Length: 150
Image (cartoon, rainbow, N blue to C red):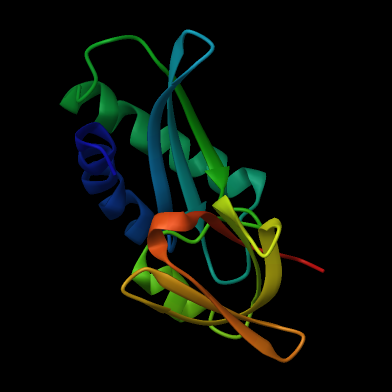
């Protein structure tokens, strides 16, 4: 998480707690020549549009007052989604036993993506079970790990 995303996370966390939400991720990135600040939220029974709107309405004036971003940007609040990306150690721990898709930077046995059941993530090495066979992928070759709804 970059410095701006970390600062926004810190500002957003109390808002999320008051509303019974969890901050899944914060992204601050440039796309098509424009800056975007995206806050992904979650809660136990899922997030709806009303949750996103309520969270956005409460966080927006806090961001305006703290002014952590000097340039103009588009502010978006979204659900983490059913096929969310796993990034933190706690994300992996929470979803052990779930179906995931592992995307790789370089081919392994001729493939750059594998779908299987998450077994572990130890020091960034992701292990999944694919049809009864455990496969491990070193963190330097793992581009992304997402939950997979099959």
